[in-house]
Image 1 (spheres, one colour):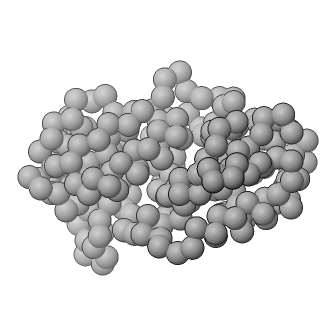
Image 2 (cartoon, rainbow, N blue to C red):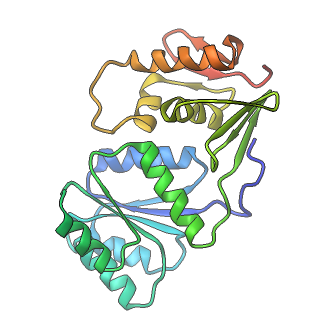
Length: 229
């Protein structure tokens, strides 16, 4: 269970007109323990962000109504200091500069890794004085989401970034079955269209490093991180 979660869950606002992406982002961030609100156009995004109840805004640039640049500029003009992470399918120094000039705190180009998105969200929350990422304890494992370290019976286990991300998703839902598709959505690029069996490769690596008993395969459903190993 998380050891040092904040008094209330961080509340995030996603302003993204690609509904499939918005759903995937919201589902993943909720699995991380955040409360998430979603809107699909800039006008509604500005209205919701102006309420002052969100700890961070994930803001797409290419939006119907008001674009992300105008939403962010309007928030800053009104005195809002809410952290803003901009998303865009564009790629170029001009776009990034324009986004940052309007007051955005960070910038992420699609397609992006979910791991990178979560790292940026956590970094922005920390930068703005929020509580550090929680430590997850599952049986003999300790998964530190902030330091990206794993201990087994108190001894550190060295994992690659992808291995850690897979384990983190399992630990966040310890005792539950997590499907390969859910792991792919959270760990790999949203645009990933490769073989689902890549998940098996990383699960096998985790079993070698952590011990085979920690991760159980539920045939036809996915994987479960056991809580008593």
